[in-house]
Amino acid sequence: MSEIRPYYLKTFDRHDADKLAVERGEKPHLRFNKKLGMMYVTIIQQLKHYKGAKAGENIALEDWQKKAIAILFGWQRQKDDGTWVRRFRTAFVFMPRKNGKTIFGSASAIADMIVRHDQGGEVAFFATKKDQAKLAYAPAKYMLENHTDLKKHTKESYGRIKFDRSDTELYTLGRDSDTLDGLNVSFGLADEHHAHKDDSLWDVVKSSQMARREPFMMSITTAGFNIASPAYALYEYSKKVLDGVIEDDTLFAFIAEAPEKPKNDPDWYFKEEVWKAANPNYGVSVDPEEFALAAKEAYDRPEKLNNFLVKYLNVWTTSAESYLPLSKWIECAGEVEHGGRVIGGMDLSWADDFSAYAKVSKIDEKFHISVKMYAPKDNLADRERELKAPLVSWANEGYITATPGSTINYDYIKRDIVNDLGDMEAFCYDPYKAKSIVHVLEDEEGYENCMPIRQGFISLSEPTVYFSKLIKDGLIVHDGNPVLTWMISNVSILTDAAGNIKPDKSNNNKKIDGVAAIINTFAYLIHDTADNNKSVYEERGMRSL
Image (cartoon, rainbow, N blue to C red; front, side):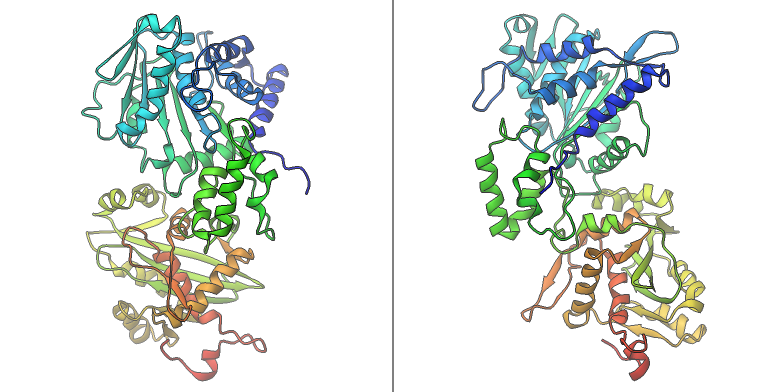
């Protein structure tokens, strides 16, 4: 096995490239102040470990930690008035458990408070609940109270620490805080950002920084199970910055995660080389023996795999990951073409929920997929809060058609389907809710190839298996619609006594309508005949499945 290069080294590659750009005069507004960055390193190493085997001992940073911290806090940007301020206004620190999250979070907050000396500063540790935010606040409190000099200048009262040298306060915030008014945060730290359902608290903290000279926001997190979370969006954006796809001089990113699994290597996540690449502190604060035991448990017990991937290897996953591979789905994004054999599929909602219309075209060996989503406009904001997904933003960006009123307007769906009928070989639908639309297609438009797809195990098992296999084999092309990707992540599977499967629609907060519409089309497509590329239904006529 060839040596695996950890992804987090891209942080250092970017730093080297930026230094070279400064030397060449390509970025005259930036500079790397190594002395400034090393001040943070020095201060942090004077603090003491909060817990674990080294509790009470001075922090001894590893080389990678020293370099990352010096980069984060040493880079500066020149303002129009000629003064130099911090370059990075936002930091995304993403790494598995036991790799030194406290050092990047709590210890860095203390060092920043001392170095920047922002008079009347406010260091806010915030999370979904105040109790969660205390997990980052408690180490900061311990470090201050156990430092010979700093403890003389700090005092805690009513859950807030006051640092008298600059009148800076450290405190916690959560959705359950009594009030979020009157904030003036200088350093905001979102702890375990993956658990934040939306960005409302982040936005409150960030908007409070407008009067600050050098405001700073840090997201520090492991991976999670919700790809509709704001942390996942920041993760994707950060990777684009590190990969050079997007240039953003205000964002620092450090991403430690398992390298992408090769197509034909089912044991990838159980190799020590992969563990080392995902965990920069492997063999230091990450115990190889404990790691091996957790890996063995995940290998022997598939229900433990997702937790192992998330907590130990920092792989975003979902409840459906073992069946519909999210990473493979994302890889299938590309330019969709509709031609050749075009099959339509529909999944209709109840009156106030999602509906979906899918088109699938088989071109050569690949299946090109596009899906249109529909939802009532008047209750979209309410559904956003219930589903913890950015539905309003998706509607504004055109990924959801928000139909007027508080109930779904089927006229919008009918219009889109009718416009495509001329190129459509067959239209597949769940007969339970589709009578009105099928009536228009058959009786008013004269379309003869409407095919009802029963939603039982026998009807859906084969197309569901087939769809999953196509994703894994890279034979799907989709347009990257984030709503559909979100729905892919929501899919879980039901199994009957005979081993047949079908998507589980029972959880109303895990929407899968777009996936259901696609699978309806594959109930037709899987019956191609090898000889003449015709559907078996063309030979025997239509019937309900």
